[in-house]
Image (cartoon, rainbow, N blue to C red; front, top):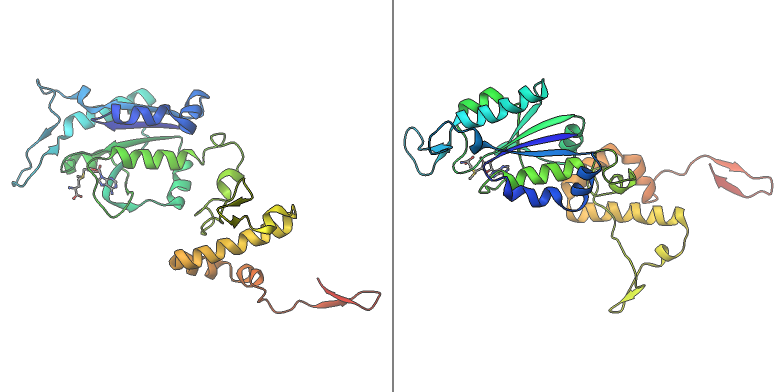
Length: 258
Ligand code: SAM
């Protein structure tokens, strides 16, 4: 999967691109992530990329020409028009579902704004989607772009290894993840739950699922309500609330559920 990041501050992104999981996936060629410095495309003799807002007001606005030319250079090199996203506090709120949707794209261009934002006309010309990482305002689009790329990249085949690595995580299925424990078995008098040391996989799965339900109910009742609505039977079964199933007589007279 390829990402091109249009930014005035490529150096603020470079370290993130070379680190950890993203860095390794780039080395393996699974991810192709490039930064494009908008300033390199400015036709202004001082390489200016911003100007005062028409109508007055504080701050500066990013001018359309360098952004458009930087974007066009990617489109021309690619030979097609990749999906273009503008990171913006006015966009649709980013979540795991949107990450899954974006993972299906083979190439995404991300525009990072700065100052008071970007001239509206270039947004109208090049942007297909606006995405916000939360209802707050940051200084620039670079951190939001890194959040989006990190989250989408984890879902790309081969980046994390096994699918399990993300399929059990919070938000994948609409629930928060169960609590995690590692060595030692006792820390500051707190013991690892017995069931996790039992080696009984079915019981461990059952315990983890109940923990996911309980955690989500306590911490994110909004998410729990949505999940419960879609998975009523499974939730009731986990809590032992499903009506008893038809019972069959065993030859020795004992009965057991089907
Ligand atoms: N004046 C703009 C407004 O009120 O909507 C905010 C501009 S903000 C200071 C500068 C840039 O940071 C934006 O153009 C955008 O690229 C980025 N940005 C800020 N907050 C963001 C958020 N919550 N999600 C995504 N991008 C954000």
